[in-house]
Length: 339
Picture 1 (tube, rainbow, N blue to C red):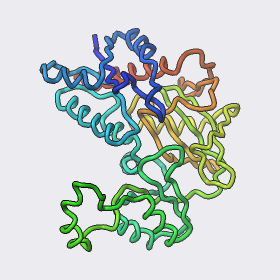
Picture 2 (picture 1 turned 90 degrees about the vertical axis):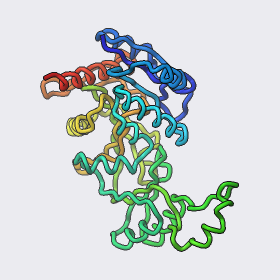
Picture 3 (picture 1 turned 30 degrees about the horizontal axis):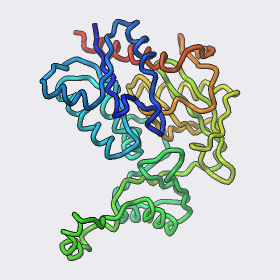
Picture 4 (picture 1 turned 120 degrees about the vertical axis):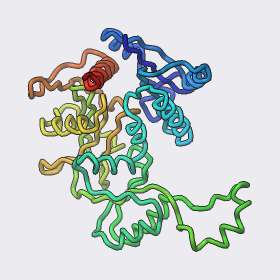
């Protein structure tokens, strides 16, 4: 039988919201997996670290794991995930999907690599590089920080002066005033001209004018769940507005687009923010892990069968669909391993 370990955080949770005190119902995911001949086990990250010192064999073991909204703890988790892959364990989803969580910079690069239709965005690492890009583009432009949710740190700029100001606000100083940095104070000041004014991770992105809404779609295996989010009054952003409309079914072209995005990403489950204007669709952002299980309390899901989207009443916890999707994903992975 196949084994999958739920690698949980310090609270023994796999969080799925912005706060880290609420997690997925792992017992329901376990039921779905065990019904498909999996053995499941919950283990905190620290317990797992202790097992590594005992040289326990994890080759071929699957790991469904937690992420974090806190950068330093997320970095800690990443160290462990890399060790899992080095020791032959299999991450569900892949490490690159962990990298995409709270990392719009990485998402932009992945969307280009996978040829996913999206507003053109340029990742920027320093203030000076950002200014050079702003000199070459037309306005308006959206500038957003690599991290953040609910449209935080997403700004609309109308000209280069506004763009420079936003870059200064969103990027970080190259010198932090603490005990450790004071040791290097003289050296840094002496070589100040050789360093960028500010470092960081932001994206300078094309602006889609006159958007009234976007679509928030969860793709769980071959099921889609979601609804429309309206843009806030006197704003250009729908994310974080909490203005959900669940009475209107997502159109088939939106469902098709979301499903194709998930197939290109090659992950079991994902959340997508999709813009729609005059029938033209773009992927704004995505999350294969640590995504909210939707606001607005949807009543229906849409299942793709023989090329047709069928509408069904949601009668189970969403974790059941998540578990089924993980099971199917692993089966597909193992089929590819067969000679």
